[in-house]
Length: 318
Image 1: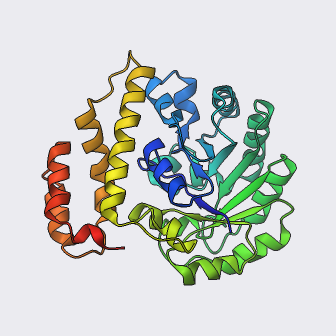
Image 2 (image 1 turned 45 degrees about the vertical axis):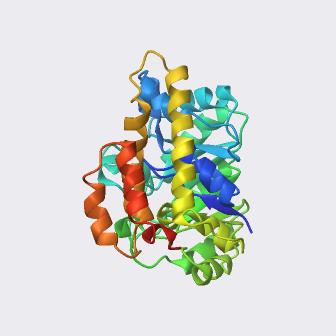
């Protein structure tokens, strides 16, 4: 059984990916990387290419809708020699992404998706894959055309988030559609959407997928990778400690590799990044409401450590 960490903006940086891979993720993805930003010379976007020593296999996920820009981004990512695959995001439902013509805006445009994948493949010797959705809404299913676009472009695999764009990240995943896609596909299929325990994992595996991708469940508790593989799950407190260590490593690496950029000092960098994660780490554990209030009040790593020390029981929950 292959478990994969989904690409998640603002979450799956090198520190979190390393944590996930140590806990059992067989493959992880970078955050979504803007091909347009890279093509226009954004140095800060290049920060998202960073990997840490000890990470497991990492795939680079790009988003965009202009063939030349995606070709450039694929060439740049390949030249780094850090990644095992290049993935095109054609499924992110966030309005700011769709309004720019990217992500799920591509779901109803299989011909454009094909052209983008071809442009990427021309510039890389890495496997190229596609991540998408069944369609814009239940009355318009486009996933079979998207599968054809991926296969005729020479893709090595496809990931289906089994919710329509209109569902965003909520609602029941359409596993029957995922199973139908598996039946029609001549390339490996990864399933995504709604897996958070053994029962939901079993249901997705019954569709016949080759791998299962975890997104929000992994953010809430990356130890799910260990648990779903039948391994011992570390406490959230242990995860927090390791996460801080890897974030400090990442801050140091960014400072060395991008001396001309403004990289936040270690204390500020770790605190700012953890602020987002802690809301999810604490989800559903005792004292969560009080913890969320406290999180909004912390501004330094010392305060963050003190918070965790003050609420030790909450961080022991699974």
